[in-house]
Image (cartoon, rainbow over all chains, first blue to last red; front, side):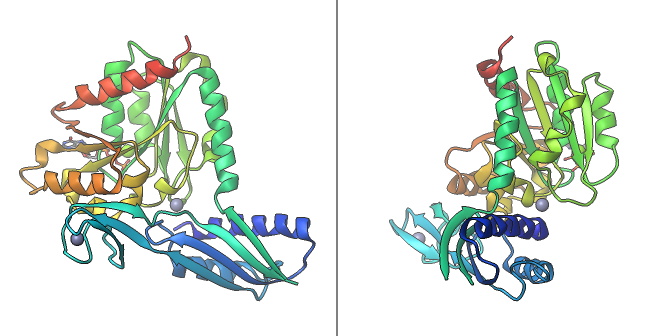
Length: 115
Length: 219
Ligand SMILES: Nc1nc2c(ncn2[C@@H]2O[C@H](COP(=O)(O)OP(=O)(O)OP(=O)(O)O)[C@@H](O)[C@H]2O)c(=O)[nH]1
Ligand SMILES: [Mg+2]
Ligand SMILES: [Zn+2]
Ligand SMILES: [Zn+2]
């Protein structure tokens, strides 16, 4: 819902990087976030492509690496990567005696390809 | 040329939240960020909390709404300082909006600051405002599947108040599932079952809060 403000913060971070490294053009922006971090990839990409014209990032590609949701299932007694939207159910046995291990990672800028 | 960066997009907003927090700490103010979906009972909880604690502590309230000031008027009637923030469409409060209210408060007279966030089960959880604790309400008519569907808020909160417990039998609320799923997401979550209507469970919540306020209080 607030992807536009995330994009503005991202562009500010990139401006700081430009000042530090002295580049004038960005070809690729790589981000990452957890699967259940609340970030909506489609909305983010849409907000990005609408905001970049006229900025350092004009024409840049956005890649979003979605970090997996990992749970520990006490019934299966092991850690399992889950593609479920529901982090509280084991994708293997369907049980609900689980603990969420990862998937909440916040949105990060991880790499830029620049000229 | 490739540049490895690794920077959190929310860093700038975190910095503002940390500055707010430093100011609260300096004044010995305990701050809760109250979150839930619309209508779960946030303002009712604030009213109940004020009525019981206002003889013992100085309380201030910030009301966040997309528009209007109904909630601030409800709180104002209890005689505590309250500031309304209208986000003008934004779906959550951030540290900057909180900072802009500071000139309206006499921090020396406040021990507890309650911030009622915009009614929304998703994005208020992503932003820090300088709070000591995120506290969320889940009301029984919303259903027990909310932890599974909206895990982030349960992950970020210190306290889960399951409100409208008086209605649980009528709406077939599966209390065991709600508790189990919430704890699967956040094993440290403190859970209280309450009713703002009948008063059930409020004493436990208020005792938790009293202890937290006392732990930071300076005057
Ligand atoms: N039965 C019952 N009703 C409650 C309880 N708590 C709140 N309500 C009612 O629920 C409705 C919404 O309560 P509010 O306190 O305004 O909820 P809110 O979360 O502040 O709502 P927004 O600010 O609009 O998001 C009101 O009609 C309250 O009287 C409760 O424990 N039991
Ligand atoms: Mg309200
Ligand atoms: Zn399993
Ligand atoms: Zn938002």
